[in-house]
Image (tube, rainbow, N blue to C red):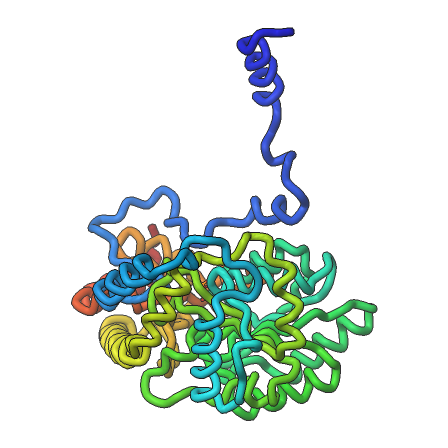
Length: 423
Ligand code: PMP
């Protein structure tokens, strides 16, 4: 029997010669080669501390720390052990019932807790939908541009991603039908159509009511499921968005994923799948992670129970409207000659088309040098081609007092690039 030192030497010899990339499956292999979306440009030294306009997370000062800390203590000191043990299956019933109440009131489709499966955020929800439904090679149709994080979910199950263009009213329906027909003509199975129908990431666009109905009509004609990612629907500035796809559908053929990440905080990691109970029943069995964080679901449930969520919703809607308007007004003053965009009606993002031949990558690098960060549009296109040259600006996290300075730096970077002074 060899002694431990010899065994360790043998292991070290074997493993030092192994490239860890050789260990991964094909899906992970394809993801390893993806560029990081949040990496700053290489080789650029900011002249001044950077103001980020790239971060799609809630306003720091709005975080309800006091309320959550009181409720956490209440949940932890409750009699019994429920918050301390595994929670399997569909998730904490009381929170699902509260979601059902909220959906019934806000979206006009009468539902109960059986219409909800709790998940680890909406990205966990999308992951669960994908792992339950998608076979390698199945087609998923998505908007272009779309949220890049979800593209990773799709790649992780080796889906065949087909992109359909959109405009300020959402998916272009004739292009969608053409994509459906093209996939079916080659014998493909289309698993679902993925849309971020309301205040989309990255464009801020909302699928119009007319197009919502046309989309449902197409989905019915070809018997294709719709996956609606509704991360931002509650964050409207003035008017509520059009009636949701799930409510317009009467509850059939639409799965909606939602989250507390954008309305409360991304670190909570609580989201859900909402759909007809016959579909929701599919997902419980695919959950192998021993359930969600049982404390957090109870804390959020208490937060809703005590009426905080409704109050908080009003607060953050007004914060984001003011931030969006302040930033947009400043950009119009400092960069109007270089940019073109529509003001969103809600959500977190400005989707900006660059004018006068400015390239997104040149501006991204030069702006980094000037001390302002944002995301290049190319990251949101499944094929990584953005012929019109866009950038995405996220306004929720940046402080109101920094908006004017951020826009000044942005305008300076635009002026530099248009004169050929590129970092
Ligand atoms: N969907 C969309 C459209 C998003 O923008 C995000 C977050 N950027 C997510 C899903 C993931 O959110 P979470 O997992 O935190 O709920």
